[in-house]
Length: 490
Ligand SMILES: [Zn+2]
Image 1 (cartoon, rainbow, N blue to C red):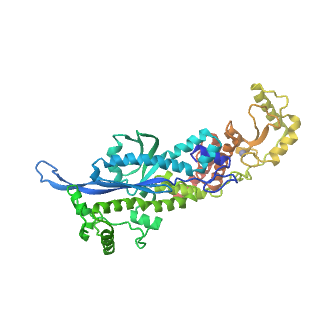
Image 2: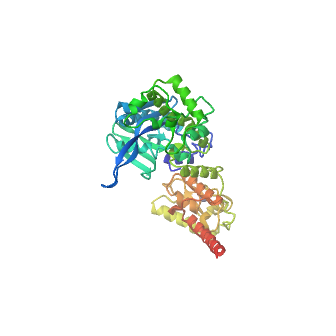
Image 3: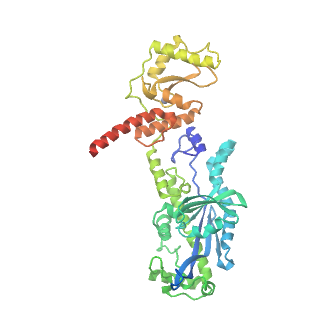
């Protein structure tokens, strides 16, 4: 609800809230369905390092980028691939192509957005620019990329044509990095680790559990790759070979595990039937890692859409889980619902003395503004106003009026440039009147109703200067709770 356009459209019942239509004209909730996935493959570089002058050198290894693939996911998927054979700057080529494709993804997302089309039809220039800005950042997802892939990118994001605009997370685990490119001023990309949405899961598990891509289903296999067969010194010679490697070179030093016999047999069969060298097999393997993320992400995006949540606008499992939880809490919220009956407060009774004071104060206010007060509410209107205040409800929150607290009745002017006549006023409770001020009536109702709803359902909400009364009520309730807590604690 931070988005100004959504606030406006929800308040006017023109847009779905939490995935549910608010009226017949309600525009369906839009999620980001176009995105890019990427993945780096690596090789070891052995370094002889001396810790001190006298110590013997010891073998250390660091991981270097070997190849990179990306899949551009729109209604037609496209996959791109680069590796070290085209020089060490292949990451620069990847970044250039990434931004070129991001522009197309941005256009695709805008085309899919019913809200954007609606605003264009209405020629609502102000609000169009908000939605446009939202889709100007294209999401680029890696898996477990915050620990590996983003470090290969970092060197290139600090220099050359790219620049980091914003980052979330620590240097060792970056959750998201927003990047711009000198040649593409109309689009930015945000590198996100898809593992942020899954917790400690492998890509294979993510593809299987979220995307239905299972090893048993031989249509798509995550694949295995003989990383231990080569390093930075001999990669070209080894990967150019056309014969299969022994099972030992598939040993994973990080997990201290080797692949299963079933996976090795799959590799032998796959390689001998389709590939002439391990370079082409690497390309297949690298591209596959970016492709199998897409069905899993799509299912995830669709699953959370029912809660009115755009998955890719979140960068952590906790923030996204929190949004899902809140969406459930607000599931039965209605803008026209009556959440504040005022039944626990003393019902309002309008005395002639009170009315006389009230209507004089309205006339004084209008006279100060140099408005014509000849048609203003007056003593003979007592019966009409008495009926409004004692039997009617607040025009904004629907609450009955009370003698004290937030629901004391007032007459609020419909048009603030006209005086307090009967036809230019509506009964508002004190709280709704002071909150509304010069705000839009529909937006006022939305915020007041959300505030009332939270209060009734014991949900947390922000306390602003405008709802000081809520603060005092909460303060009283909090003090009672603390006293109870302290009593129980002692
Ligand atoms: Zn009210």
